[in-house]
Image (cartoon, rainbow, N blue to C red; front, side, top):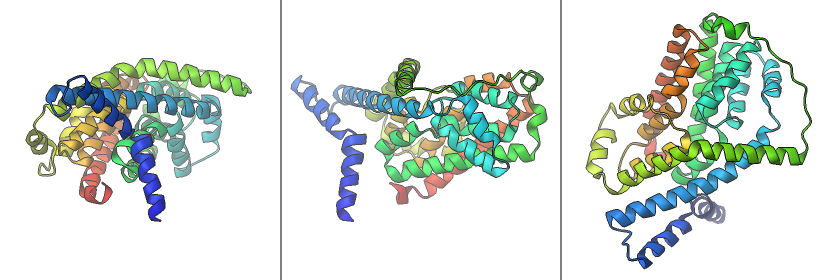
Amino acid sequence: MEGLRAIWLIFQNQILGMQWLNTWIGKGLAALGLNPSSILGGSLQFFLYDTIKIFVLLSVLIFGISYIQSYFPPERTRQILGRFHGIGANCVAALLGTVTPFCSCSSIPIFMGFTSAGLPVGVTFSFLISSPMVDLGSLVLLMSIFGARVAIVYVILGLVIAVIGGTLLEKLKMDRYVEDFIKSAPHLQTGSETLTRHDRVEFAKEQLLGTIKKVAPYIFIGVAIGAVIHNMIPQTWVETILGSNNPFAVILATVVGIPMYADIFGTIPVAESLLYKGAGLGTILSFMMAVTTLSLPSLIMLKKAVKPRLLAVFIGICTVGIILVGYLFNLFQYFLI
C-alpha cells in the first residue's frame, strides 16, 4: 500500500504538478543572477512555471478530450439524452457535460439546440451547469494543484449541483419561460456521419488550436494575478478577507466571481496563490465555480434564450449551491489537504 501511495505522489507531484520544472526554472533564474526568493525573482518563477505547466497540461487534455468528444456530436448527445427520463436524464446530461466545451459561452449554443429539439429544460440546464464547471480538464488541473481528493470531491459536488439544479427547474415547470423562438426553431436531423481515426485526430487538432487561442489571454492574466498575490500581497490581508475567520468569505468570493469572465484554466493560478496565502479552500472553489458557471457574458447570452424569471431562478439555484459547496469545503478542508 505504501508503495502505491509513493507511486501516486510521484505521479501527482512530478507528472501532473511538474515540480521538476519549477526547480529547473528556479535554478535558471539563479544562474541569471535573479534570486527566486526576491519579489521579482519569485514572481517571474511563478509566472514561467505556471504558464508552461498549464499550457502543457491543457494541450494534452484538450486533444484527448476532443478526441473523445468526436464520438459525441450534439445530435448524438441529444439522441442519448432523449432515451432517459426523470432524474436519470439529469444525471446523464450532467455527465455528458464533462466531455463538452470548456466554458459556459461555448455551451450555451449547444444548450439552445437541445432545447429547440424538445429536450426538457431541466435536463438541458443540468448539461449547461456541469459543462463549464466540471469538465475532465478541470479534474486533472485541480488534481495537479490541490491533490486527488479535492479534485474528485469538487467534481462530484459540481455534478450534484447540476443534477439538483436541473431537477428543481423541472419540478418548477420552467419550460414555459423559454423564449418562443427557441421552442419554434426548426430542428435539423443530421446523419450519423462516420469519422475515421484521421478525421478524429484532425478534429482534436482543430479543437486544440481553437481553444488555446481562446483561453490563452485568460491564462496569462490569471497567472500574472496569481504571481502578484503569491509574491506581493501580504498573507494577513488574504487571511483577514478570505480566511476561515471571516464567516462571509464564501459569499463574498461567489459574488465577486459572478461578474467576471474566464474559464477554469484562467482561475486556477489565482486559486493556487490564494490557497498559499491562507484563503479557505471552499472560498477559493466557490470563486472558481462562480466565475466559470455564472459569468456575466454567459448570462447575457442566456438571457436571449430564456425569460427573466427562468434566468433568475437559474442564477439563484446555482448561487445557493455554490455557496453551500464552499462552506462544506471549508468545514472539511483539513481532511482534504
